Amino acid sequence: MSATKLPEVWLRGPLVDVPALLQPVAHALLQAREELNELMEGFPEALLWEKLVGMASPGFHLQHLTGVLDRLFTYAKGEVLSEAQLGYLAAEGKRGENIISVADLVNAFNTQVDNAIAQLKATDANNLTDWRGVGRAQLPSTLIGLYTHSAEHTMRHFGQLLVTVKVLKQ
Image (cartoon, rainbow, N blue to C red):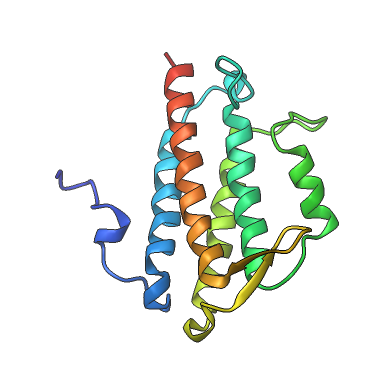
């Protein structure tokens, strides 16, 4: 390992004020953020909405990563989605009328990760097995289930973004 390259986030020790059982969630989100910022540095704006063989564009993945974290952490608070969140969901993957830059999408993801980490820090570990409803159908989950899925889902979509970006840049 070079002197300038840090170990992966999970190997840097526990995060202050994050409950022990939520450390892996926080580590995964922070790792995704670091890697996403590095990956998207200098990415051409012209390729943001390009699709490879009908698969999702980098723009979609960036919007979706942010939106899903927002939605899952809303459900974790025991709340339903707002009209603004539903509107964001409907707009994921679409350029829209307003020009959205790579930097705008990366900054939005960074902010959402910051919000998620703050919520993890405020979580009472005694409530991790509490029931939480997901979506309009209020499908059953738990607080820790939502948090764990947020980490898994973020890493899955980051992996898809990584491959798409690397192929598009060739």
